[in-house]
Amino acid sequence: MTNINENIDAIQKQINKTALACGRDPETITLIGVSKRKSAETVLAALEAGSTHLGENYIQEAVDKIDTLGKDLACWHFIGHLQSNKAKFAVQYFDYIHTVDKVKLAREINKQAAKIGKIQKIFLQINIAQEDTKSGACAQQAVFLARQFSQFENLSLDGLMCMPPYFSDPKNARIYFKKLARIQGEIRAAGMDNLTHLSMGMSNDFKVAIEEGSTMVRVGTAIFGGRD
Image 1 (tube, helix red, strand yellow):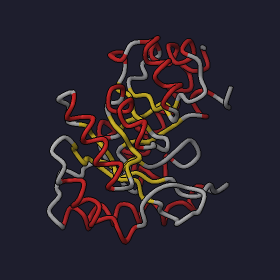
Image 2: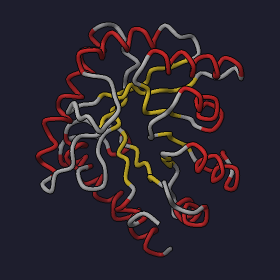
Image 3: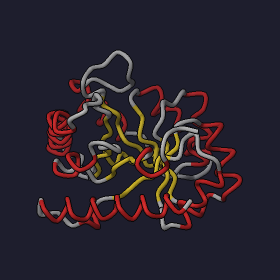
């Protein structure tokens, strides 16, 4: 558990250094600890080490964990593939849903949020490299989908999310981070100025993502180690 404390501290220092080096305010970048497949005890260690934002990929696992730990201990981010029939739980348990890529899913999230009087913060997920193995909308649909999502009264479209291919040299991911930032600019130019966040960058490439404008980096392995 000591390693978790040290890892979070080391990553935060890297975030701060990278931000300052490219003229950004480190306070505008949020570190999300990705705690999928980790026990509640392990996640509690991260919370005690100062981690205030946590990301989960699987609804049932996350529900059990959040019920054990308490929803108010962190800002919870859902970052896994979400099926419409699980939208109810995502809305009840998560502050942010990063993986909305279809109007059908957005409509169901809006419906569930309306039931509990919540404005659900969501991100539009883009399949930035058009990989068959990954979810997300194609880049050409981004402005259209953003307009559709923005019409739902109980949704707040706050940003975009992507997962580029894994590269041993993280600099190779730069073109994909640039592309997501460019899509953000297109959507904002279309009148959706509240699209302030870019959720991009993981354990091996978060520094490159920050250089290209990321406001939320999703770091799992570098904090918690490999999957349990």
